[in-house]
Amino acid sequence: MELRHLRYFVAVGEERNLTRAAEKLFIAQPPLTRAMKQLEEEVGVELFIRKPRGLELTNGGEYFLEQARQILDKVSATVEDTRRIAQHRKTIFSIGFVPSVFYGQLPLMVRRLRRNKNLEIVLHELKTREQVEALKTGKIDIGFGRVSIDDPDVEQELLFDEPIIAAIPTGHELARKPPSMKDLSQWPMVVFPSGPGPNFADITQGLFHRRGLKVRVSQHVNDLQTALSLVASEMGFTLVPEQVRKLNREGVDFTPLEDPNITTPVIASRRRGENPNAVMRLANTILDELVQNRLTGRYP
Image (cartoon, rainbow, N blue to C red; front, side, top):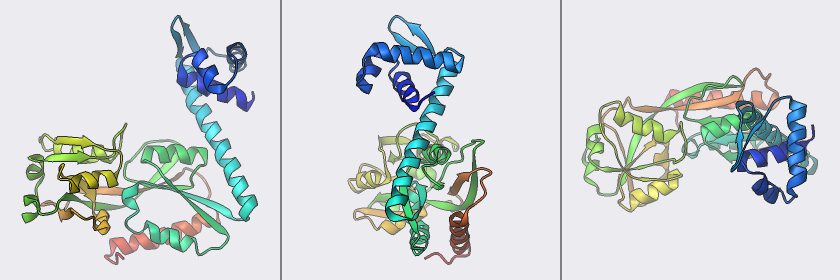
């Protein structure tokens, strides 16, 4: 089996159509059809169900598509890191993160790691589920997110629970006192991120649903910065982790909630069962210190 077979298969699996996949790959359809038949013969199972209007993946095909993507991502990451190492003669350490954890102590961790002149730190903004896949393919070495995801190849560590606060338009009446969830439910809410969960949007909307409250969503947006821009435009409020307060965004006030026990986790994700190398041991040591600073109130 060659890598081109996997690339061809991923294109066909995503397009569900041989003609469109051939156009995407810039090859003729007959050799693509032959390659798919050869692949099925080599794997020993049917990967597609042929239908008049296109193709449908079998259960085995769905699984093979997921694995093929991971293999190609791993190859791509390996090639990229190899080039970087050859150019800079440095060890690559890649960190995945959701934006809301980057306003606290994570920049301190990056800064301290960069003191090692033999290290090149690469940052990837990824949702927690994307971090899990990136860990499995080798794109990142550690991830920081807020959602617990069960995967046999990835272990997650709860670092600490962080209070959730409200971001509201400057001068809004919600700022008169710490609002309750019932108070907030009377106003339109900007929700982030959009897209399939689990994600922070599920966490925040769940806070209302579990209390029997309806949430009035005015807008779904992709990221935190856009959500805060809409808050500043008086489109509604949004809920954010406490460390986002450091942004000092014009037109936005941050206020604690009436219930200080409403929190969101900060979670570190790593590959399961992997013996930490020297770089990972250094990162873990720095991380332990920063978490203790947070837990004991020595928050920078």
